[in-house]
Length: 461
Image (cartoon, rainbow, N blue to C red; front, side, top):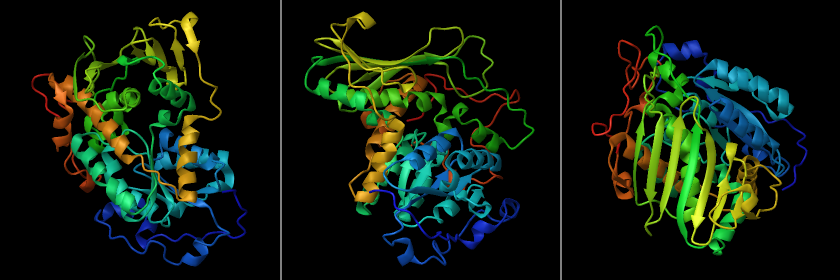
């Protein structure tokens, strides 16, 4: 659908409670009763043919949320506009709003009374949308299931960034919403953008056609410098401090392993066109580490698929070591590279098993659009043309496969797909009730350090 000029300005009115100041909100109960979603808005006018703008609400205003919003506003599928923003922290909203406004001009229409803070801010921002608009969920994975459920209940389409839940319980919450969203004909895109890479899609077609033979082994790497957390000094709100450092805590955003490795796990499952039946592995911390987070610093996971083939996913966060960011697949005929540094479409087929530059026999056509942009174009096109588009189940399964691998290393045990599917484990059982006065789900010791998984003693499935 081509963009059409809009000759009138949409007036969006949110619930009365959304106009309260953050200070007033903190002084009141955090239980909010949702009011009228579109009070004062002429619905026939909103749905009129001359106004085909898809409106966006950004929930989570960090760099990832700003990037997703930029891709949505850059889409050539038709007009889009950002009309609401929400974050727990006011400074993040201010920074994101300034940057987006400067770059996208009047496509950003978010006056102060549509910029919301607090744990219930997501409700207020979603309430500024009409059914059929899009919530961009770019907060941390602990909050994705809750925010997704609210958007689906309101008939709002969703773009949800990775990762999708920190634990099996949250992942099952997402899976429970798949059929609900389908029944409402909602369109849901999930931030595993490599699935929308034309270069990788071309290699998948080659693999399915037998170009590399039967797949025997996949190996994926995400090895980089250290990611360390300083001690918590017990002089500020511990809950908010943990949310400010999400990749250091398992309950907030799966800690760093899944945040970084979920793409590599997804690539392995895509290549195999199946989900692993089991996972086992090894991991550990850097000697004499001063890291106070819940992270370990090296992961080596061996996934087994139903046909007996293997995928090895390796991760490391240590200084002065060899770094790598790539995925390779080995078949009975030859090998191929599936992905390169920074998720670049570094895609080749080699003459044999040697993965060297002088051994390449096939390359795909150069990508015309970034996968980050394509995933948004596909979602928005599905909304405009009422095409089926729901990536939720696949994303949740990839999330669960990632949790399997992490749990295998943390527990020191073999974890099966059936065990992961049956588990209701949660790192935090009261995410939906958290307020700024809530105690942090995990507590620092006297030295400001947090508990680290110990194989043989740790459970997360």
